Amino acid sequence: MTEQQSPLRRFWVEFQENRFAVVALVVVVVMALLAFFAPYVVPQDPYDLENLSLLDARRPPGFVGSGGYSHLLGTDPQGRDLLSAILYGLRISILIGLAAGVVALALGTTVGIAAAYVGGRLETVLMRIVDLQLSFPAILLALVLVALLGQGKGQLITALVAAQYAYFARTAYGAAKGERRKDYIEAALATPLSGRQVAFRHLLPNCLPPLIVVATVQIANAISLEATLSFLGLGLPVTEPSLGMLISNGFPYMMSGRYWISVYPGIALIILIVAINMVGDQIRDQFNPRLRK
Image (tube, rainbow, N blue to C red; front, side, top):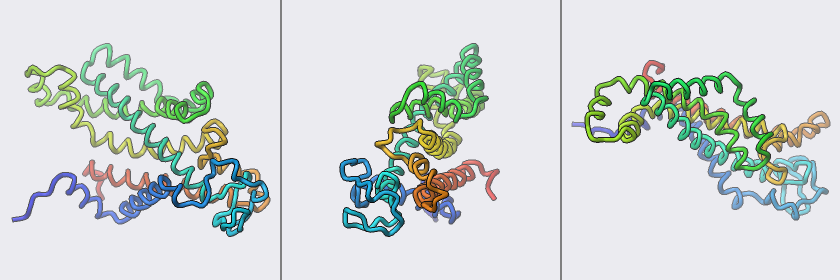
């Protein structure tokens, strides 16, 4: 008699059937570990402006700088070691993406669940606001909000949350609307439980699968949005170089042959976003059996 597997164990076994998704997950984990342990891995702190030398600026990969170590990926226009700057930039991108994704998930889920559970005028008002926001591109909303709020991590996360929470709200509302009509909700309403307890103890857990899928995609989108805003000069300050800012710094030198300043940060950004999306696609397929191949 075989031992019954837990849902998490069964999910992991099915996940392993897609080798590309497993490789993508490994890539995401490795990049995250390198980013978070960057101070112990890289030879230079790119935020320490006192240790930067303009004599080392725009040097090609393999150049041995004034610090006595080899710049494996070259240096940027400020003399930063590009490998160090990329790993620090990855840490910023991942932290901002996770923070914006988690806050947007919490806010959007609350709005969607409340609209589906309460119904009536509240449902109409909330979902019309969500639909109105979804009619505008997220990048446009983020640009406007960052321009109004100014530069900084807190302001950037706030802008990304405001631009993305509507996706979670619409997903939570669609899932909760279907669950709201089921018998177990009516049975829970017949007990002394409060409306909030019914909504978040009974209704919410059954709406989580599609929300997890959307969260994976939106984290990748938040990283992409942050890089776009930084590329345009509206993201983080110049003292905290993100991947988008590194790409922007090297853009004027592309035609002069100093390709590495923009290309290597761009490759790191593409690999991270593609890997996260591949993991999200596999999670989506597992939560929706009709999409399995």
